[in-house]
Image (cartoon, rainbow, N blue to C red):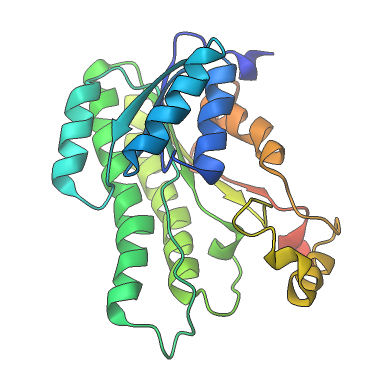
Length: 251
């Protein structure tokens, strides 16, 4: 399938040390891309890159803190203009009631989830423009960019901003052949949240999803490959929701 052919493409995945970021890196490598795993946890991305290489993939580790301009400049200088794909995945949550959340924690979430996404996308776009071959930037947002939940005000605000930022960047950068789209997962089961979904509160949340199940990382594979590949060459400024129907559930 054309959407699975990423041979000859170089893909940067931020927040690639664990969770969905690591999964995304493995999927792209499996489908032929040379993957640059970027994160602050150097040992974790080194080990992940070696695992990908041991299974026949192409991968390298790149230290990166998306909130640090010096780190960003060093990372993008090392990559040059070879980027074809960016999966802008790094993000944090810091759940708290809005009335009690500190300004410092609110800023941390916005700095990582919004400013960090912009900073990576901007540098990637400059590299893609310099290479004169265009590219695809996928900003990982969330269904909480469209609806809200308790105790995640900063996270929801940041993801809503990422959806709008995606549209703005798509408009400006289309002239360079750069496509910018958002991938918006619903509730995806990972090792971090697995225990929560066995609780009464977690099961109640699952029951509000029309498909009556959590998503798995694999449910994001085809949407990710679509946005990364030339199969989506006429898509830019789109927000692709993958949530088991959660956004269309009744209130």
